[in-house]
Length: 477
Image 1 (tube, rainbow, N blue to C red):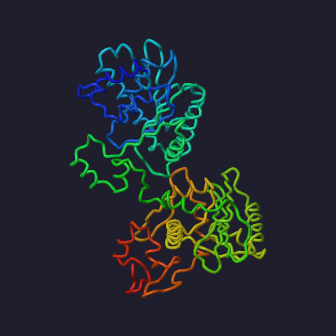
Image 2 (cartoon, one colour; image 1 turned 45 degrees about the vertical axis):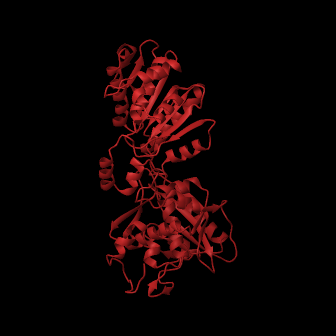
Image 3 (cartoon, rainbow, N blue to C red; image 1 turned 30 degrees about the vertical axis):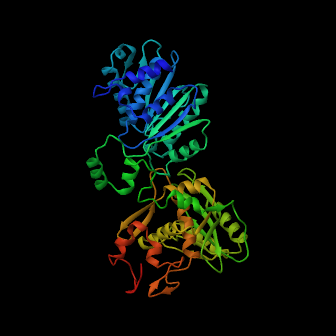
C-alpha cells in the first residue's frame, strides 16, 4: 500500500499542487481505505457536488494500476453514461500529463488505461451499454451511482458487475456518488452497507463542498428547487417533488405480514386494472373496518403480465376474480369499463356487482390524490411486497393542469398496482362531503377535504386560486 499511497500523494492537480497537499482529511481517509487491502473491500462513499468525486476516483485508479494491481489484471470503471465515463478518463489523462514520470508508466487510450510494466488495465464502461457478464474485476469503480437509470438495462448491467466481484478473492469495489432519491436502488444498497461494517466501509460527507464560494451557493439555492439543492449541494437523499410518496411514509404503511383471508366486521372491495398486451393486469383485494373506515388494508394482490404474442387470458382473469369474489364474501368489483367491458359483462352474468369507474381527467385525478393522501397519512396497511413497494416508490404524481393530477411512471416502469389499489380506496374510504365542520367539507381522515387531498407543495397555491369545485366560502385550510 505504501508505494500506491506515495504515488497518489504525488499526483499533480490542475493548479500545480500535489494531490496530497490539497486533499482534505476525508479525501485522504477515503483514498487510503480503498487502497488498503487489509480493510473492508467494499466502499460506499457519498459527497456533495463539487467535492472532487471523479478526480479522486481517477487518482485512486492510477495509484492502484501502477503500484498495486497484479500483472495482466483487469479492472473497470463504470459510469451512468458515456459522457460521465469520459470525464473519469479525462481526469486520468490529466494526471498523467501533469505528473512527471507517469507518461511512460501509463498508456491512455480512448476507453482504456494500461500500466505499461504489468499490462494491468482499467477499462471505462457506461451503464447505458450492453451488460457485461463474464468479467473478472480486480478493482471496480462505480461513479455517480445514484444517477444511474433505474430501467432494466442499467440495473442488469450493475448486477453483472457486482456479481463478478467474488470471482477474484481480493477484488475491491468503490462507489462514489452524490445523494439521489431514496427510492433509487442505490439507497437500498447504501442502507445495506451501513448495516454491514464487516464487508463495507461507508463514508458520507455533508455539504456543501468546502471549495464553493458562499455567493455561488446562494445563487444555486435561488435557482434550484429546494429538494434538488439539498440533494446536490447538501448531499441529502431527498425525493423529487413529483413523486407520489416518500420512503418514510411508505415504510410506515408496511404493517401486514402477508396475504389475509376474509374477516368478519370488515368491508371489502376488488380493484381491477386491465392491460392485456403492453401493461400488466392487477387485481387488488382491499378492506377496511366497517365501523370506522379510517384505514384500508391490502389483503391480496395478483399480477398478470402479457405481451403482443401472448396476451393475458381473459379466462384466467375471470377465474381469479370469481375466486376472490367468493373467498371474500361477494365484494363489489371496481373497474374501468373501457378497459374491461367484455370481462365485466361476463362477471355480471355470474352475479358479481361491477362498479364502473370511467377514467377521465377528473376521475383519474381523484384516484391519484386519494392514493397520495392515504400513504401520506398512513391510512394504508400494506404487506412487505417488494415489487409493490418498488412500484409505489417510483410512481410519479403529474400535474396536468392546475389542481388536476394523474399517476405516471418512468420508461420501463409501471403504475398498474397503484391504480388497482387506488380504485379500492375510492370505494372503501368515505366519500367527499362525508362530514362537515365549520362550513368545511371533510375528507376520510377528518381533515378539510382540500387539505386532505392535495400534495402539501400545492396546497397553498390551489387554495389561493379558487380552482376547486364546490368549495364553501367558509372552508378552512
